[in-house]
Amino acid sequence: MDKFPITISGHAALEAEFMRLQQVERPRIIEAIAEARSHGDLSENAEYHSAKEAQSHNEGRIAELEDKLQRAEVIDVSKLSGATIKFGATVTLIDEDTEAKKIFQIVGESEADVKSGRVSITSPTARALIGKKVGDSVEVNTPGGGKSYEILKVAYV
Image 1 (cartoon, helix red, strand yellow):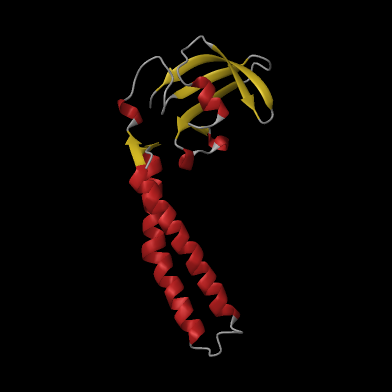
Image 2 (tube, one colour):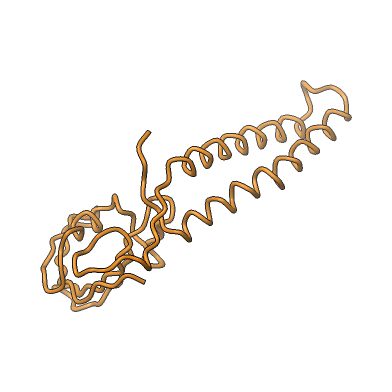
């Protein structure tokens, strides 16, 4: 049972989704199944089959979230510091080809969102950055091709 890193906010989001699925969605789906059962013949009852499928998806997601919450290693990024890039670091980079500035925070897999600048610890970008310092140049092999960045700043916020 491998632990995986996650920020406090990422863990809170997983817990909130877990609670919503258990306390709101599960009772709503059970009610929908009961309502569909009351309509009679279950073999041709589309509402019943739809509700049972929703129940299956909901229970699967609940089990997945429960597993993730048990294996999560919650890390308080605000208590981290240092010049070396590690989990939780917010890194300012400059693209050596286009001179475009990019800012990424290295987070857990379940909380990654590239559009908001949050990259997974397992992504090619994060793997290339881990262990580097300000002033270092890094080569990142992405699905879109290789990129060269210079590290301008490392912060933990």
